[in-house]
Image (cartoon, rainbow, N blue to C red; front, top):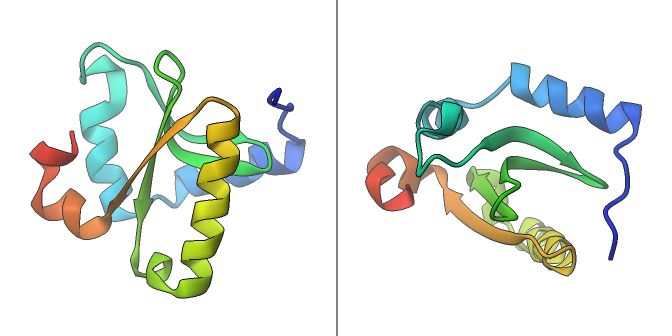
Amino acid sequence: MPMTRPTAELRQFARQLRARQTDCEWLIWQKLRARQLLDLKFRRQHPCPPYVIDFYCVELQLAIELDGSQHFTAEQQVYDRRRSLYLAGLGIVVLRFDNRQVLQEMGGVL
């Protein structure tokens, strides 16, 4: 399944997400940015229509998603599964971590 080009609206939404990042997103970004992890380049809030990926490594086709408490509802879990399957169809592997893991187990997350 080919990846489509992000719309101007999706790119703007990604910019807004970068400007309003959560504390956990900021913490993990400090470890991923500037090729600090295994010399891999990560992008944050990367548009991948129709979604925006929290952190994305092009070289590995790896998406890292951070889940706050809103991701624990049954409805959100169904949405997240559908989203992960869609991204897998594009060849992207999705790793999900909840905020607690980022705060308490950063070494394991990395």
